[in-house]
Image (spheres, rainbow, N blue to C red):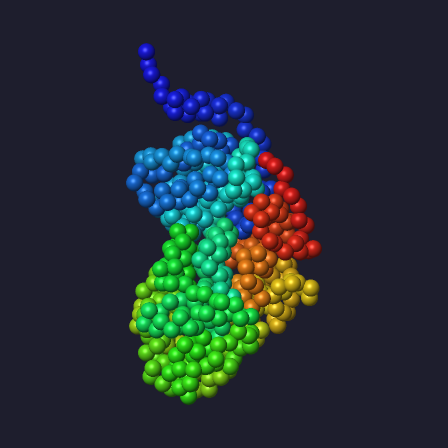
Length: 524
């Protein structure tokens, strides 16, 4: 008698069940994807993910295997499924879900992907693993909203059929987190990273130093964190990351194809360092700790050699911990530094950064100096003068206009969190603009992408972070990813409103703007 193993029998029954079951009609064009894909064509049917569904990858492809594992882990809590990841020589066309790397998709770029869905199978193909990872975020959004739950939910788990070809408009799509004004621990930063990854953003800018605190361990200058790491706005206890903790953050981001850009702000915004080391002050006297929110009063001693020894040590240690190509040197609001000293300082620091095999990024104020063409100038001010200077030096511009992209701006006059020095920033104003149409004289060819900064003067916990970034973060993700021609506030606000159920299942403390038609997503 032939012996049939229980697992094989279950899989056989599962295949028979799924192959005989009539597909449920669904319209891919009516799914509320953010960012909006470049190309989408609906087929009117659906794929059902069941406990028998397998994930297939090419034999020996470790990059695809990592993405497959991420997909399996992502769907497990809500579905209760533990999908088997199976290696096949030719997975394309196999029943189930296939993740395939293929050079023929090189034209879609490193983050582009092709997604084909029918009643029998899902085929996700890309040029490299980064594209596969962006593609599984689309699969996540195509699943019912209850996929976001952390406990088992009742199915079915249906995905509308059709084809999607997708790729980003801009190569740099990021958000900044200020961990200085108020400190956020490793787990909170990881949560922030997860929010970026869910909407296909690929850069986390960490603002690590300022007047109120120093948040990264520098072993050659230990008092930076021993003294400078113990303060924050309002007099709280502050905190800092050990180098090992910082590396965990960097790796966690890298696993989600997000690059960390660390910022050491200088020569201004440096009071925490000036408290820790008296010799960094022009008069040799240590400053008092600062827990307020004023800016522009501090400066490193730009004419002392010890300052450049300090900077070289800091950049050397940070560069060794940071695989990304950029170190952000700040450079904004250096009102306490004479202009001629500021220019000389920026030009010398630029050389230090390059000596450690990194490129410079800085707030657009640094365009007062003569900069290398590899430098990125981040536009933030209400006036474009510095950004225009940067373009005239053939620099690329990172768009972060405060009046449009600062997530710490209040939504309106009664918002309990945020500031309003750049104006109030409702959800429509945050979305309804284009990067290349923001400044006359700066064209699309001059722009590397978008970054939405979140400064933390008024926020102290994850609920506060969520209130200010949700739902504006999704709009910035779309501005960076989707083509300008597809962007329409009237159309976008409907898709945004349909995120309500996902937000609430994740217990996200989002701002319920009256401009958005919030609506629960009906079960599939």
